[in-house]
Image (cartoon, rainbow, N blue to C red; front, top):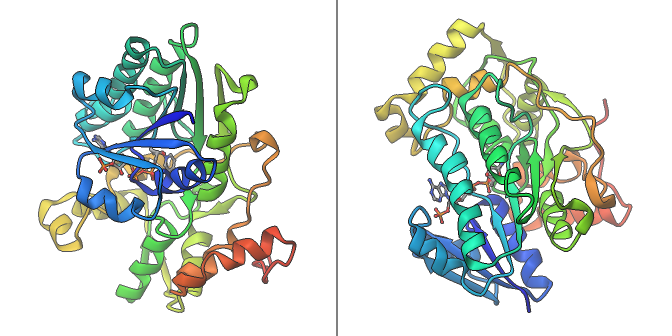
Length: 329
Ligand SMILES: NC(=O)c1ccc[n+]([C@@H]2O[C@H](COP(=O)([O-])OP(=O)(O)OC[C@H]3O[C@@H](n4cnc5c(N)ncnc54)[C@H](OP(=O)(O)O)[C@@H]3O)[C@@H](O)[C@H]2O)c1
């Protein structure tokens, strides 16, 4: 059984990828900073080896990679103190870590590396997040001669536990109006299980060596449409008040304040997030490996309406050709 190291495997994408790998009878090593917390996410999976490790330490990284044939890097952060061209938290997680993983692979004789970047990553992108993701891609692709590398670039990802449609729904449950900047920004949301299937299909696919793949969903939406949709599905539709960039930046600045983060339990958004919306998050590239992207409307209603236990049924119905009322537009 191939042993696979899933770095960042305790998160949203990681859980879904781990599930598929375990189903394929692979042994999956998941290094995590907090084992107890990660255990809750991965507890039902039998062939997971969950190890507590500081992956920013080379010795710990080497130990995590011991005996592995494949490494999948999923580490990503959404916020950082600001700097040019990108802040220190972005630099550490998106640029330095991939570079160190490449070198750890070389030391450990691992030949296959799959790296998760983001759609829109470019050296001249408007946000620090996207610029740092581009620098991470460069670090990984530079190893292409020595390692078999593949990069996946998802658009924003939806699925149960996402921090995207769930966030829009929660905000409308809590507030009387939805205040929105960049309402006309475009996204092509992709289903988490489709991303997981692409990553797993890529592992043994030699055609994918040295390549980058955009992973975008079946349809393009504006941010405004997505917020309206999440509110409607969560049965708390709120009027949307669109504000200009200036007020939007002010709102984001408030969200960055320590006291606001403390009250809300985490940072919901930042000025950098807003900057990333200055370019549309869409792709004309076909979904790879013959996978047909799952429509958002076949999955999102169940988890947004709070019927968590049934949330997967609509996906299964869609796959079986019995689609439940897609959003008519
Ligand atoms: N979700 C999306 O919509 C989306 C869209 C485009 C691209 N992506 C990219 O896809 C990848 C996976 O995304 P995700 O949504 O699954 O992320 P996630 O849920 O936040 O999980 C990432 C995992 O990485 C680990 N991690 C986070 N920050 C770290 C740090 N500074 N040092 C070490 N470990 C750290 C955490 O594991 P522990 O806490 O257990 O250590 C966390 O569970 C990321 O690279 C992300 O940028 C995601």
